[in-house]
Image 1 (cartoon, rainbow, N blue to C red):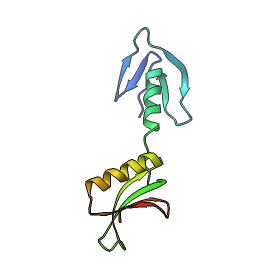
Image 2 (image 1 turned 135 degrees about the horizontal axis):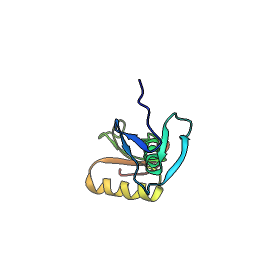
Image 3 (image 1 turned 30 degrees about the vertical axis):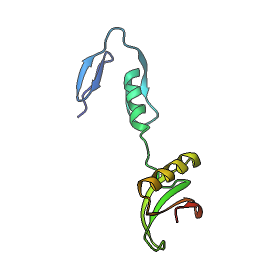
Image 4 (image 1 turned 90 degrees about the vertical axis):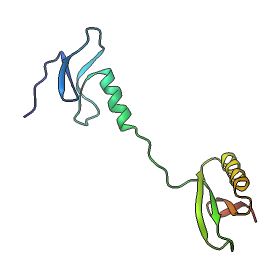
Length: 116
């Protein structure tokens, strides 16, 4: 059974506590139709931060790959980058790090640069 909270308290982490006297208040209601009751701006800020999490990307415009000695099989995907300038700098850094390795900088299927 849910605990009823008076208008002068906020339930946070399982316990009810009184609001500070100068705390900014929202109109009582629900935020975004998500079913979460909001009493203060700080609580609204917390809800926004948790709903705007970073999503991991799996596809990028440019990729830097490490190939085997024959140059026929992909050994490792070293980096994925959106910006061409950053991708070129990453490619040059990988070539300096592994000078004898076969490394490619690709934009989709097109090979922009390769080290062999």
